[in-house]
Amino acid sequence: MENKTPRHPIDRVASAPSVPQPGESLPGSAPALAAAPVPGPAARRGDAGRHVGSVRASLRASCAEGAVSELFAACAGGAVLTAWALSLGATPLVIGLVGALPLASQVLQLPGAWLTLSFGPKVVAVITIGAARLIWLPMVVLPFVRLTTETKLQLFVVVVAAAAILGVLGNNAWTAWMGDLVPGRIRGRFFSRRTVCMTLVGTTASLAAGMILDALTPRGWKGHALGGLSAVACLAGMVSVYLLLRQHGPRLDAGRERPRWGLIADAARDPRARPFLWYLLAWNSAVGLSASFFSYHMLSNLATGFAIAALHGVAVAAVRIVSAPLWGRAVDRFGARPVLVVCSFGIAAVPAIWLFPTPAFLWPLALEAALSGALWGGHGLAAMDLTVDLSPAQARPFYVAVFAAASGVGFAAASVLAGLVAVSLPDRFELLGQTWANLHVLFFLSAVGRAAAGFAALPIKERGALGVSEFLRVLGARAAGRLGWSPSS
Image (cartoon, rainbow, N blue to C red; front, top):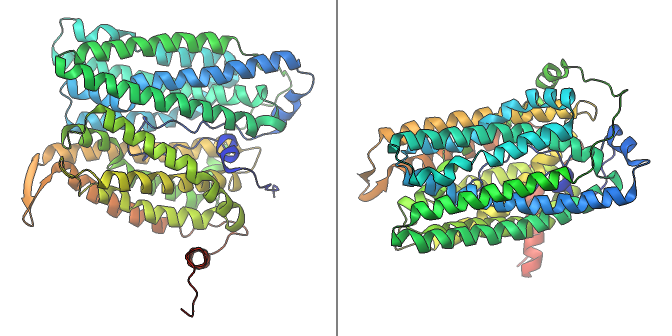
């Protein structure tokens, strides 16, 4: 059994393998808590004999590339992506499909691993990441070419799908590359600093993109704004390729063992990992019923504007980062399983809150942002710790790939199904004396599904973890102590 040394929670987020965590209130708009590979034998061998100056220059370039990648994401994702869909007349079904693509593409983690092993991580990362960002070039001129709206929408979906696929392949190679490049003794500190840098750039760029859309759309320049943002995204993509090329390549290791692909089946059959695998499938299916539609609901039904939509995503990300130290200490002291269970049941309330806001009654969104950010922060840390705890070190890449595939399949299938449900319902209908939108049905179903998926977390086993009831009693006692209460009062 591996020894678990307590670390700062942001370091844990940075150094844990990346398992998709969908369900941000604005998918793709909140700054990413970028994940780095778990230290392994190959990474430690690569630490020795590396030229210190070259490594330092590469790490500086990596930080800059992370910031530039957030600029790209702000100009080609989140609220901007929804703005593109709305401007091209996308239906809820198309919105669901677009939202499903990044998670559905996670099934390509396995062929991504094969590409990385066959051609080398730096080559694959530079080509695929560069292509994933530069493929947005047609979107720069799309608002100005004489094509039917239907053709433009089809091109938009193709670009998003290709970018998602290339992004998964690139992330797989980049993870292997960074595992060799970043010395294990500073990995947590480096990626925590990189995460902070990315967060600052991402929040600023997201707000700026939203303000630009709000300012230019009423003047009839929405197409100009979207084309301009795509141009900035492509420029950021070119800069990111340059910065990737500036980074030191991985050490060649002719004796490195090729993995045994039968480990994939072993991961799926592992009795310790199987409950977590089923949980990920159920959880992401429930999340997928609503996650792709929050920003669409804000813009089309609540008329918030793009800046407010971006600000909401920033608030979720900020609360998530602020709450990370508290959840990190809880995971270190009491285990990841009780935190995962409690956060799962708590997050079930998030889509239910979306049943209440109206264009004249938006304050519940502030409550939702605080609750969503806090609970998703704990959920992400707990899920990542369980990923490490339930996967043997030598087979961890395959376990991570299987977990990612289960998450992606569940989310993608549910997101497309949700789109079909939305288009089959009237845009507005009366029930219990109230007027409801078709998306409210998805939010209700997602809340019920998340609560049901919370029960799927109960069979998960974790060595040394506190029971859920004991964990709740400890939390209650500590909260009462902070408020000055006592059992006798």
